[in-house]
Image (cartoon, rainbow, N blue to C red; front, side):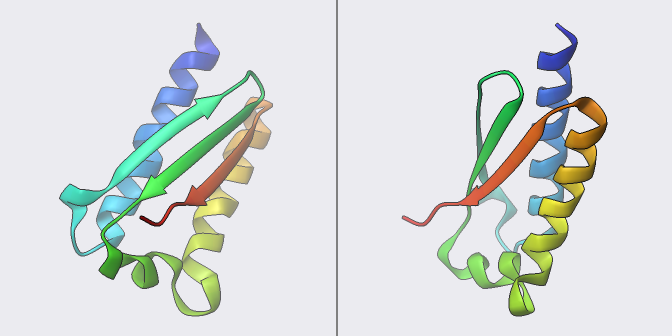
Length: 86
């Protein structure tokens, strides 16, 4: 039960961070799929927000992925973050 709760919290945290960064927060969609230790977050945002989310030289998305790595390390999980385009 604890792992499911922590994954839900992580999904909410990822969604909150991404909504704060983009220009159209109401168009943010976060999907989660996992199989125990591996959890993958698939992110969709408005077409105009991809550049904002990726950042210069990918620094913003790398920072979000680093947060997921550290948090996953503490929980014994591997979190992956994918940006999906329409």
